[in-house]
Length: 116
Image 1 (cartoon, rainbow, N blue to C red):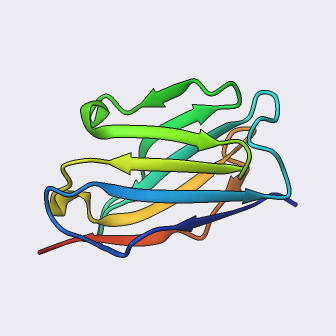
Image 2: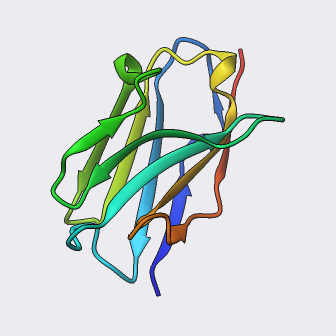
């Protein structure tokens, strides 16, 4: 059973860089044709796709935030990392790690608040 667990700071100050880690267990992030996504849901709004990293390591970013996003992986640790720079209060959201084949697997989400 593949399980995903997000971790990171719950509070980030404006203009700083947000860093979140998704730990994948029960399966490999390099499994053929698997993609690993970051999604987020701001308060009172719907889910927004932030970006993804493929089994090959190729990355894909939401054009709306492309200049601020970096997604990477550590194969030895089976981790996916999201970095979002120059955060503002508009980046306040529950952040989810999801992936596999389609969006088969989901983490429980982690609340991130951007505030001074």
